Length: 212
Figure 1 (cartoon, rainbow, N blue to C red):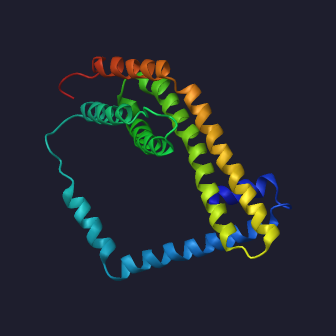
Figure 2: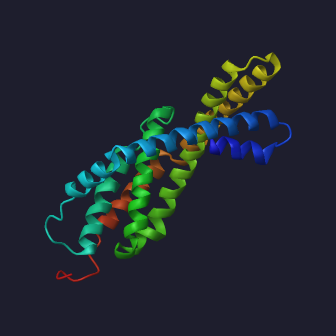
């Protein structure tokens, strides 16, 4: 809702005044639900129990230096990223799953890049960010289309309902345009080059000594 609201407030605040008002009401309703759920988790102690259970599940395991840990995590998330590379860029669900995996890979790099080979930050990270941004744009349009469609179904005024339906179709068209742009950019050759870059980075020798 926030993304959709921000878009219409910036692009056509006067023309979309009624829609903006509806979106603000929906956002308030959603926020109240989140606050209510949070209060319930705190009141009945579920939040505390879940937090303690999560902490207990974390095992220190075998002692290892930060660079060893970072390389292990980078390899794990790089493998998941590459495994989830969509075989069919026309499948929006595959692209969404790829986006989710991309976010995890990006956060791993941001947290651990200081002790990883320099190519991770200089060459791999920018591409990962582009993947997330391009697929994020696609996802935003897809969600906006469905949201506008649902709002339109509940609208009683015919003219407003038709406008909402038109906006929903426009967002759906943007999904297709975003998908095409991503497919043109993330070609098989480009994906293979990125795979080779990741593999060569994983094979690079550690910069720290074995006693770290």
